[in-house]
Structure formats: C-alpha cells, structure tokens
Amino acid sequence: MTTLLQRSGGERLGLPHSRPMRAIGPRCHELRIQDREATWRIVYRTDADAVIIAEVFSKKSPQTPAATVATCRKRLQEYDRA
Image (cartoon, rainbow, N blue to C red):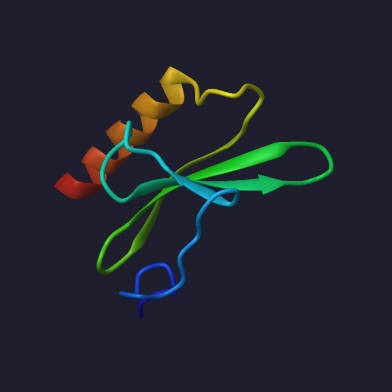
C-alpha cells in the first residue's frame, strides 16, 4: 500500500510544512509540526515501497543539530542494508 507522499504526482508537501534535507540524503525531508509547547520535526525519507521515519525531535534552534543529522544518516544506512 502506498501513501499520498509516495505516489507519483501525489501529495506534495513544501515549505512551510516540509523541506528537503539534502544533508541527510536523497528523498529525505523534515516535516514541521507546531503545537502549544514545542516545535516538532519528523525526518523522513520516501521510497517506492515505504516512508521511513528516521527521527522525531523537538527543535529548539534554527539549525538541525549535527548529531541528529548523523543519527538519521546512520539509521537510513542500516535500513538500506537490512
């Protein structure tokens, strides 16, 4: 089953909701979610057969922390090897 994010010509999220995260890898994006207490980020990658969630975190600064980028890269590499 594919999602709207996966389908060719399907749902496209752009700024301000989602932005590409080329520093992590191809097809990777950061989804922005604001609630009353925090600003949340979901880093995800869209593949032909899945949407992979690499990380969910509360963002406190304008730049994504280097440790978060490294964690996402590592998780996606492990997913690709499996």
